[in-house]
Length: 268
Image 1: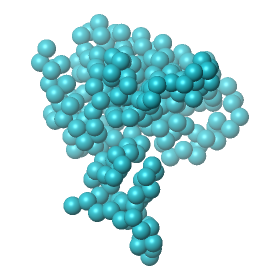
Image 2 (image 1 turned 135 degrees about the vertical axis):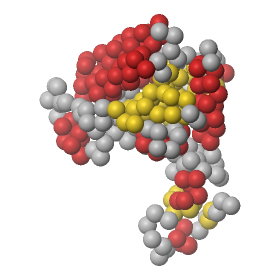
Image 3 (image 1 turned 30 degrees about the horizontal axis):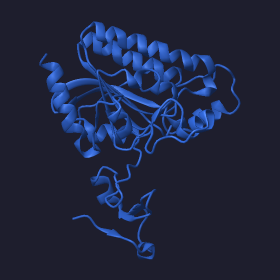
Image 4 (image 1 turned 90 degrees about the vertical axis):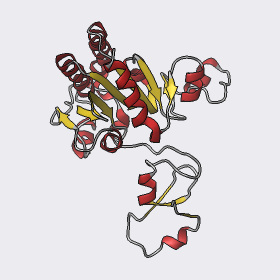
């Protein structure tokens, strides 16, 4: 049974980590119940952003994930002011976690982006790790899952970051030539150079509900064209309606949907 309270004063005197608050509707929730609900607010349906490791935990078979290339770290090629400090202070090495796993027994290689590292921005490490995932898939004949959560290319790496768009897209072309599937999962947000490259190249593009997906944000587009956009423009439901996303899947159903997709591709 889910338990929620509206009176924030009732949590006074309780240990930290017992309660949490929805970032959208301010509903106070039991942390345990919130996590059991996959960090989706039971009141308003708001999807809290997940770390890469938490998302992996929700999706793959328990104990099946074998991380790849965990030690690779970004380099401040351009001596961009403050970039080195941001890298050192972060609790994770970069904006993507990669590895092999099983989903209901089906073997995959996967890359899961983490918005908590510099807005999930794509730099040289993200590009390299995604390419290595694809190379592993080609070697083992596994299908690929990439879960995106990104603000786009990492400005601190300049042109080197932009080059990752072509690098990852070229690698995915090799995957297609070998008859292996790329399943792209789009979460909030998937924007900029990531949306303009590998994120939208899936053999099947799956999105979480109400995820912002697009190259530039709605506010930037409105300022550029000086017109008001349609309601829900660039949200996953709008993109599904207009053919850019194949299916919108609730977080609680993602593992089951991926199982069906993998069953289809492995039976071909």
